[in-house]
Length: 367
Image (cartoon, rainbow, N blue to C red; front, side, top):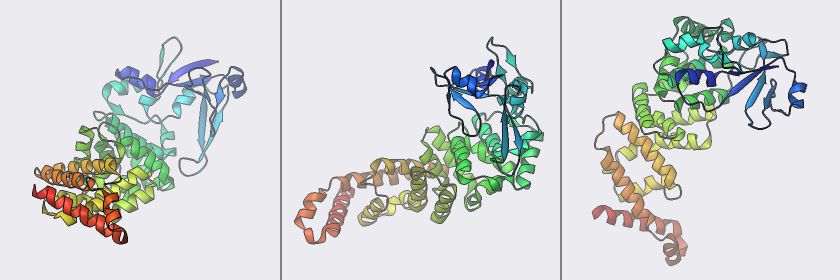
């Protein structure tokens, strides 16, 4: 039995980057042998085991054979006779198909180290075309390594995958998973550029047709500079969009609730927030109520951040005045003792509280 460090850990070490997780491939072992050595099996589709002490992942060397459409249409074969090179050959990019043995020797049958030095994202072999998820992965790695270019032959292969309709077999959750990872990379706008170049962007995100792409990516770039969280980054894309577009995209991709809610709020209230200088006290209270700002102040702060990124992308230098007006209104509304107001007018609680908040906001703005 031989154990090799593979994939991202080797790649990042060669790039001089910090290694977050280490993955290992085991050659010459059976599942029964791994269990006897104390490893805990966790793999459903293929044999993966957790180390008994470190909990790091150890996968048995395997090959894959295409049996149907989509990323699930594979038959996996894991056995002691599968070699390391056969295992590396099924990987996506050459920079991810490098291994190290226990003695530190580099095993690089597909030239991944050279591609790292040259800054090239290149597919390992023809099997790349069998998994449509790899279209998204290439774009995501372009976002992680923005100085790298996609090899011409890889771009051509990606376009063929798109033309063959393989992307249509991807389930929404898998698309969202890759898009979400890409949004959190250092240059997520590059992911969208590569997908567009590959003629895949409107296939994986058809709602992009309804967006102002230049505006959305400029706002996203500002969100990256500010190191905003995933919900805020997604929201910047839709701050200037139609509400229906945001709702449709998030529903189709089955985005998590926090991401969906902030994106839809940005689409619905981005315009009013940016125009807050023109809003009177009643309109500001209605805006705060629509955003549920009093009950969800942290989410509202994230919304203001996303809308501010959009405003900056549009060159609206006075937007900070509008944002200050909204924040000022929120503080005034928060100062209203709703319980006391309700006690004074129990027959008309909601309207009484709304009127009290409008009066508080009006007074604060006048001051």
